[in-house]
Amino acid sequence: MGWPKGKPRGKGNVKAGPGRPKGSQNKATTSVKEALTLAFEGLGGYEALKTWGAQEPTEFYKLWSRMLPQEVKSEISGKDGAPIAPVLNVTVGAQPKSSS
Image (cartoon, rainbow, N blue to C red; front, side, top):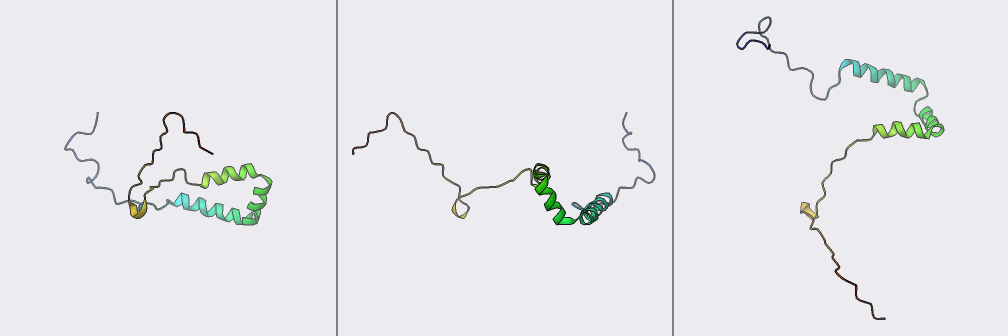
């Protein structure tokens, strides 16, 4: 059974605030990223990553592929944004023999 219509909910029926701005990270995510950055630098940073990638190329490229965008949206158009006209070449029957 749902909340009765017209009956106020809780103390003062106060609306929630605007919340976190769109695109901003929460404190936990920010803290974890900072900790990982410190650990990366403490383990040798770029040079250590390069060495590991040379020793374990399969694992390196698994990690790398997760960093790439999963979907690419694009639009193809002709000159000055005009639509591209489709080209259709159809050959019916045997092709004529060339005279040499």
